[in-house]
Image 1 (cartoon, rainbow, N blue to C red):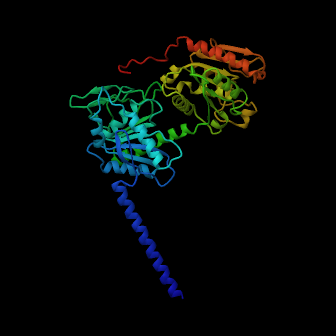
Image 2 (cartoon, rainbow, N blue to C red):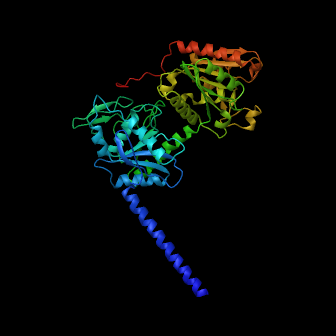
Image 3 (tube, one colour):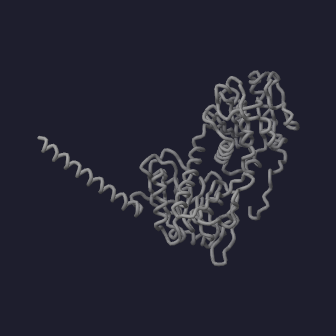
Length: 470
């Protein structure tokens, strides 16, 4: 009996090992050849393989090959990204270039190709969430990725990563004007300025410093990040890390706890409203709903959920940009930002970290029931009024004073509105305490009056660009 059992056990193990080896070699062979079982097409991107991870995807990347078509480096990068949970769409640069060479007019617009392809791929894999595509590439494919991201409208691409980008992208036409200034190359094609202010993050990975890109971006603008690494393996790892970071940022912005209140007519403005630490209710909800009835598109941020985990001023700034870009991708509406209590305390800490293009659009900042200090996380101490680690008035002072209205109740004793640092901003003392005696309709009328006056007035841009072609 024991002998028969032992023989059976050996047989089972042999079968299991054999099955495992078959799977292993099939997997290696499939990965090296990039599987053809699932393909999608959109506009000029035709018959593109979809490489799906064996787990819930964390993002999607469109990966442009090096010059000459898909090679070993492209496969290595694609495989590494799939292993990290990315949906990868590998694109043969030469096949795509053939389509681009047929473009008519003065420039090539790539955003529609990329956005449409990502939607088709997510539908194909049955994804329940939409990912803005990260665009990446090797060599000249990396240059194409950077050019596409630099000149795409906001809220179209998550960002770009270029591994050892080429100096020139060889196409008959440049990409359509956007952030990056293009220059014809006498040898053919175009170069793209690497110091552009970008609508989404970008990382350029190279073996040596790239000409035209500052080691440290200035003035808080969204500019490409340069990563220099000696070895090919280190550069590949840096590229994978950069793609994952951009995808994580995109996924995070998609999951923000927001409440969308459309305007009841063609919107005249976009308003972001950071609620108090009790969440989106009472004062915040009432004012938001009323503004929607008055032709303002309101996006409310539920501070109870948003600040349940500790945030940084940089995260608040990034999420503010993402919300504005998603709510108004045309970039045409003037923007107001409101905050009540905890929301009024925390938003000013992010002001200095906002890119200039967003600062220039925010023409009114309405702060209701501010306090002298704050934390960046909802805590029991905050509910008990115990204050926090960050002073509020110095942060408010970083905002142009002609754009700020600071409202406080006559019974409040802990308001930042009356701080001497804020001399020169408009303050308004009204009846009641921290909740303004519940007269929210009257408060809404005051806020709309102050907002509309500033929307109609001329606002000096935070900083005018001096670069040609912007």
